Length: 633
Figure (cartoon, one colour):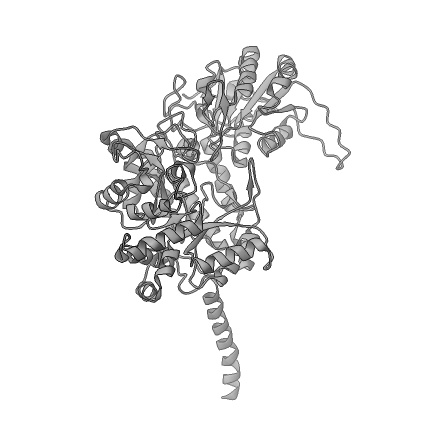
């Protein structure tokens, strides 16, 4: 008997320890609010003071980086969580335009775990993972921009995107993604949506949005459709000013609103409201959608029947703050009164918190409305299991982030999205000239020739734009002449560039232009489209085409509308993305190593309609016959 007990005890000990381990760390599963979670949310609400309830509405930035526990930046954040009873945080990384300093998964998970322990209530951690976790952290699965999914046209890709992003996000302690983008990008001059949208067809956008939501929610990540009621038909960046949607109600119902309706039917957890003016819905010039009761409560909640969390776009954006220069705290009050539940990134946290608290105490904001919003937030936390455990297992990151099979999926999506819009039949596929000879570090001297000239246009040649593209090309053409151009040196470099182009057998012009928040570009007629080439760089590209259009392939590494400014382009490939997976894909396509199957998810004025795309079968160009590179329009 003693022997049996002696044998049983270690087994019980292991089971107990195993159970304890599971309870200590989050075990993400499909989003689900059970009765226990519902009860926790209701009981917690009743225990909260008015000050604590108001604090639950606010979400502020946290920069994912290493911080000592005594660092002033860390202490400030910890004290803000406690002083203002914050409901959540939005994880990002340090940014010093044009440089985004991505961090490591371990740094992100460690600081989020630490902050969770510092908070009385579990924190709801959000992030803007529009291109997956790799958008902010190294080592995670990389995906192209949303428009690339529209070009690939496969719903399985969007669902896998949601699934993988959810798994990697939850592993570091992020529960809520501000994605997918339900905007229909119908305006080619849109400076801030562009490739962030799946495309210009409401049906396709809705299909891809719902597929993403399905994959994400099944793997424990809350989703957000944005930017309600539609930011696709605007020509202003709402980070800089008030954008206006000029369509009438019939237009809104047929183009802008359908993807949002589809998302609501698919069970999306939250809707983000844009700082855009929509006269057809609210003619008040002092209202943007965020502060409009007609749009947030009347349209979104009452007409569309959305019952989930309504979150503002960042309250520090100029599209909103310009309307509240005299009393910045009132922006939060008006947004909440309009029907928003979560107040994201206030321009001034203290002023916004105090204004909200004063409005509650005075009765301007009904206590019933405050309780309803806070209860939504608490239920969301419970549906994620945060009422049970709020920490993540940092030791598990090495097996959860950047799985080889997931990396392969991200690359395949980029491959499938490459779209050939124009081909004169004289250049593609380009031929490789061997592989780079191995050599010792610091002792390799490569001879550069002008047989192939690669010109990389970007906003700032100091950034990573084009680096992966260059490495991929040099693996195939070791002596390629690669030239980096940005607006500051375009005019000075023009002579040397054109001399190299004239001597070249083939020219690759890669143009890196993607939407960037708050980017301003000056042109001869004032501010110009910030996803177009600058005047100096555009002039140089035009000269390259004037000299050698027939032997030049232009790669749109982002904005597909580029070609409308350069109608003389004869060979044109779109990646819809500047991600490294897209750089790899477009080089493989250039050299005939993969099939080209993408189709435009948007129309390019005077160039090609939506759905256009010249298909090609794979044909390795190394010594191969160009005749095998078949034409299938």
